[in-house]
Image (cartoon, rainbow, N blue to C red):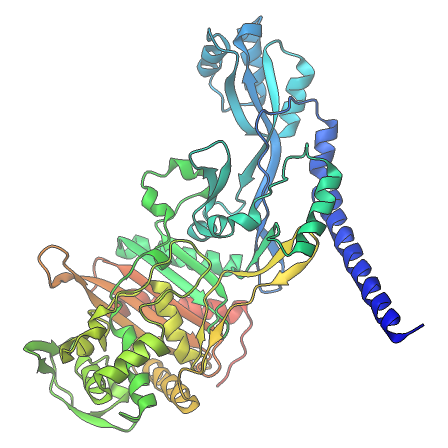
Length: 571
């Protein structure tokens, strides 16, 4: 027996074992995970529907113990209709139906049960099988009972814009609309989902797809933690009630790998009643589909570019005059006051526009452009797994005018999506790497195999000493500036920065003098951060500065994360 024969025998044995494992996994999926559906089909006496029943993969959320919680599932039940040509007693039919379907109005039922010239009138959908069995047993002339299967979202409005929903889209079949339902529609869709399909075709179909390397059907396991998501949504609802912004949102992400634990917007909607939404714009996800001028949370990125390029150091000083003129345009600190000769730390701690402009001038336009566009990824899509993502507007960074770089240094004149902003700021929190924000951690294929999704990470984009320096400076902002509002953290190192941006006037040009975007970003622990938090409110009412509207909210979210993830003190 030669070595070549033994080698081929071993390869054949391994291939057989792999196929066997796939078949076992597929059997588990069909007999255990979908066994209830097949059993219901065997036991039911319901009429077979004309169109294939909806079938679709599950979307799971994941808590801190890696426990999967279903966020989008398929529910089995029944639909009832009536054939008026076969109805012998419409009143008795409606009485029997309304006992099982209390939401059905008698007047509607009677109208449909007696409608002439038709043989099919739908009475109700998405009803539980117990009621269907009871109506079937009653044997009511003219009543049609059909199997029904539909998408249900146990969390209701939880992560609505991120999950998306399933709906008809100009045809007889349903598909994912918005969110993960749309982005991963090919994975979630079940082409052979009709239970009338041959069982063995389903069984070996998965094996064939795996061997050929074709796209496979599966379930999504997301990084969204339902408890963190719920906390963020509650905080945003409180913010909405108090400050009445047109829109508010937040993201909580792991800056080391881009896993998003929570992403939310207000106003939002109930996924189980999406057809009742008055404004369809609520379906869209402003975190990836809208751009905003973010204000002073950009200053740490400017400072990091200055430090990394060697244009300034932490100990560099400048003479703050309160206002300067650049290309005939006046640039001033928020309070118009001069500070005199001060170090770089105060540019961040006091959020000084003149100081950010100084750093931009020292860094130079070409270097600053390189850092903003290439090191931080501004003006480009992040690659997040959500549909409709757009890139930021950074054309001012191609201008020869110095004023464009000075205004960009404090977050005006350039616009970014919130997710693009979080990715850029994460570079400051993770040692200098550009991560890919994402919502899906792995896919559980129907073949029985679970595969982790690989998300790119680029870098380093900053020198290690730069990353450490900017982490130290942002921690100084919390310890120095936030302490005045009693918002510091005694036993934890936290780095943070606020942002207040004027909103551009699309009609007359320039900026509104009384409309602002309030942003707030922070990460902790300051060194080797595990959590980065981003918050923004568009046109809040009753306060001019972000520190007034977001300070308490940010503090509560950090405290929640510390307790929820049992983060040990680092001080």
